[in-house]
Image 1 (tube, protein in one colour):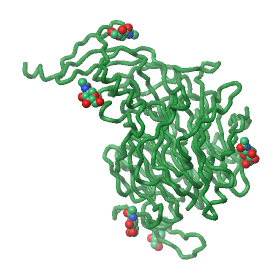
Image 2 (spheres, helix red, strand yellow; image 1 turned 45 degrees about the vertical axis):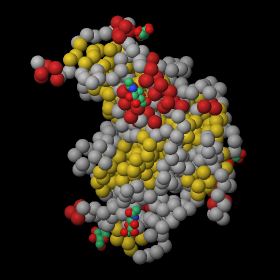
Image 3 (cartoon, rainbow, N blue to C red; image 1 turned 180 degrees about the horizontal axis):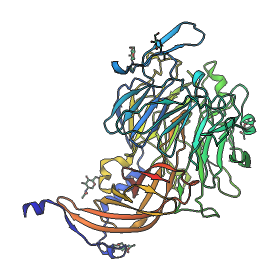
Image 4 (cartoon, protein in one colour; image 1 turned 30 degrees about the vertical axis):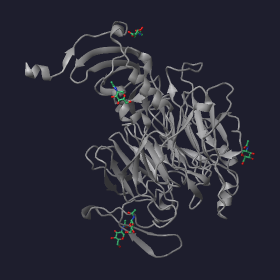
Length: 582
Ligand SMILES: *[C@@H]1O[C@H](CO)[C@@H](O)[C@H](O)[C@H]1NC(C)=O
Ligand SMILES: *[C@@H]1O[C@H](CO)[C@@H](O)[C@H](O)[C@H]1NC(C)=O
Ligand SMILES: *[C@@H]1O[C@H](CO)[C@@H](O)[C@H](O)[C@H]1NC(C)=O
Ligand SMILES: *[C@@H]1O[C@H](CO)[C@@H](O)[C@H](O)[C@H]1NC(C)=O
Ligand SMILES: *[C@@H]1O[C@H](CO)[C@@H](O)[C@H](O)[C@H]1NC(C)=O
């Protein structure tokens, strides 16, 4: 009996939605707690994870093995990360016009293990400076371009679980053009597009279609959006839309691009306000959540909205050369790109911001993090770091109430900093190096720390509201287009209110230079919601549920690959489980 009473007592009764109704009880506490998360200024918490990872986090990519591939450039002198003696690898290069050969035996890349909070140095050979990346359908990082010997490189890192994998540089295949400050996006057929780059007005694909070795496509839009002396169109914002076309934003203009036929389908209105949004007047951009259970366009696909925030005025970059630091922009523009007659709706940030990182949180809200309030991107080009993240409440109907200023970090994250969403709902933040080399005595020193920002939904006061995912059916965790699948989870509250739940798929982004490439969230259709059974275990009961959701309708809505699946209840997300969409 002792044994019996110590194990879960489960009532193996399956309630349907209506049968469960008489058992439902939401405590006042839960409701009160939720209103705190929704309204509190100054929420969230910063945690220093690592005092030094030895490398400044210019680029970051989370892979499905819960490792984050972090790297800087490779040819600016030694980093602070050494290899184990038996794994040492030295690069030989010259710096700028100095003919002296430097032998550099430090690491410029690493794999960060999220669960154990440990790092492992990796070997990257060609120069990754200001490069781009995407994750292919098998979960492998496809990393493209850079500078010098790396400007046409294609490098890969697979997601292995045994901590043996490292960079592979493609030997036979290269990019057709130099791609320095280019953007990438994963496509419905599993290829990556690489768009633009410094003095390069074209795009290309990896891998190339059969027999196409010279495939590059000139795009006049990239020429037209290039500002003399300032550029303001590098790292263009690129989002794959549900209809399969690409949304492309550069400087202050945007187009819908049919990349298969190299045809501009439509041009959106110029974003008003006289603000430049792309490097070096760097703002950021997100494709807001694609809601299958929200508004659909005429063809049954989800409506798509883009949000772009921050940036700088024309002339701001030029003025940094004389140490004049102009206030950054406070404006954001939001546009429903699937509307027949789309218009920018302008909104105002709580503070000016250049070089913000914008990440989708599992709740569908956007966190705006890192950056400065004066100057532009580029070495030594900004002052006045903005230490407070800002939460943008995507679904708040009143535009005046959409922004909340959150708790500040103590570490300035200026040029060459980055941030990515982790599967446990935290935001991993690192980098900042507004200098040509590693420089630790400066107003804004090269930063080698790694921090986590825990958004307000991770507060312990919401623990009782947080779903815990138990399993995904089928057990292969493979989600097929248009097919329903089940997600079982537990909660410590009893509810029958399916409207409080959502299930979202989120891609891990390739983040660099304030742009989270391929970032995407698809909010799935809920087909069924069931309370399965109750486990009466002292001191608190656990309630088991199953949600059946429909997989994304097609590969233009969710390109094939690995996604973080979150169950969200009343604004509180579970930890994610990885699923493969194919
Ligand atoms: C859920 O339970 C509450 C309280 O028992 C009841 O008022 C409500 O109608 C139920 N909702 C559904 C959708 O069954
Ligand atoms: C209600 O919430 C407060 C924190 O907001 C917590 O201290 C308290 O234990 C909760 N009460 C119950 C019954 O869960
Ligand atoms: C990096 O290494 C240099 C040289 O050894 C040292 O002076 C500096 O303090 C280190 N910086 C950090 C942040 O660890
Ligand atoms: C760099 O130079 C060292 C010393 O001359 C040599 O041992 C090493 O093989 C070189 N590394 C590369 C990648 O060429
Ligand atoms: C957009 O940018 C172009 C090129 O810099 C500039 O001529 C034009 O005035 C800008 N338009 C607006 C509305 O800001």
